[in-house]
Image 1: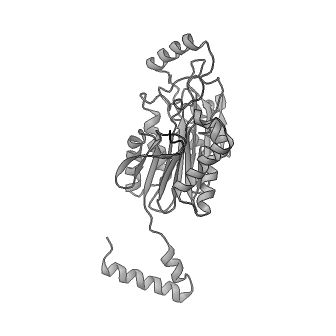
Image 2: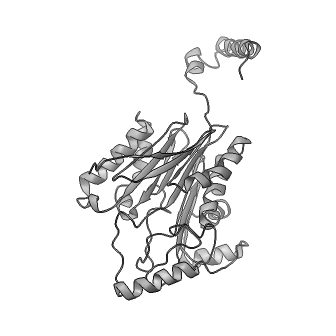
Image 3: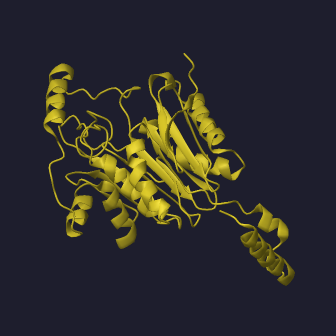
Length: 323
């Protein structure tokens, strides 16, 4: 809480900086108050936000917060679109994609990774321990095992039974990408130091062709962070997001003065304009700027996101299709 004594000390410091020529009074007035915030996709973001917020509330880093948050979802076998218990591809194999990005523009990504519970942590290891950004398939698995990650079966009894049922009903034909076949978790955070980070992780589309990779691990599509401006993440039909570099576009729109919600809306409108089948699928975007302001927007009704800045709340996103 700000006291009169604190205010006098701060005012004296400001006057000294102005008098010394180190900073202008307008610059001091313009400096925003840091508002620690974490935002994540879908209803399960409420649970993921809790460990992330615990880290932020203790003045931990946004990078640690987003990794800890999405790991909760990766390990929850009841969530069949992310990590352990994720629905497999049409060959019955669970393949995972994830990326992470910090305030310095460093990023790491893994695609088409099998047998590892926490792909987001492997992505962070790629970022911190290699000169690369992305590792794929067997190479990503070899790297994970060499760095202490344990190999395990991610296909649960429930998802195996669902796959066997699908095989009988669909004769190995890849599932259409529709409004119900999605649910990545993307998370963005702003810490007490004013730094932003983000993470995105998924098991991808159910029953996809073996080898398919969506937008979630693609920097600039499923996730993008610019520490001067803000961050954005995406969920839904990855192919639609990759075609227009969705998260990068949103950050650039915020750079040009748009609010997080306005930027997400414009990105959705870009999809609507250029992808005629937009009513057949869902895409939702989230954004967080340097002031801790948040927003989201989706193509169709049903996209929810969770925001924690002291209170953890679930928000129904605005959407383009009104029917």
